[in-house]
Length: 121
Image (cartoon, rainbow, N blue to C red; front, side, top):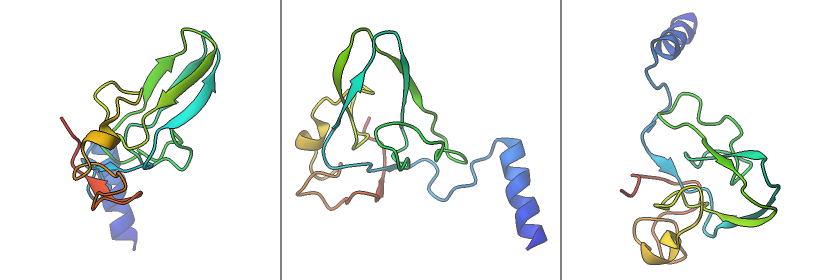
């Protein structure tokens, strides 16, 4: 057990991802998440899909190749944040969950919420 713990620590210190499938996105939700935002306030969008606080980061990306994306609200109101993580306009939803059923986690997809998939480019 100490050998495994040391191996994990070495990977973290070297910057090598230590999470299985560290390059894969996790589907964080089938539909976008609406959130009220305040002008001038910073929000950190979960780009990996692993957060339990979707659409925002909770640090679950640790050990992956992902980092949260900072979003500064330009006005008060509601923003529709992407939850499937397939958007090309991150962090805002662009409808990818409707257009890419087979690649994302839409209702007809073979990818379910919590499943990992290759990031749509």
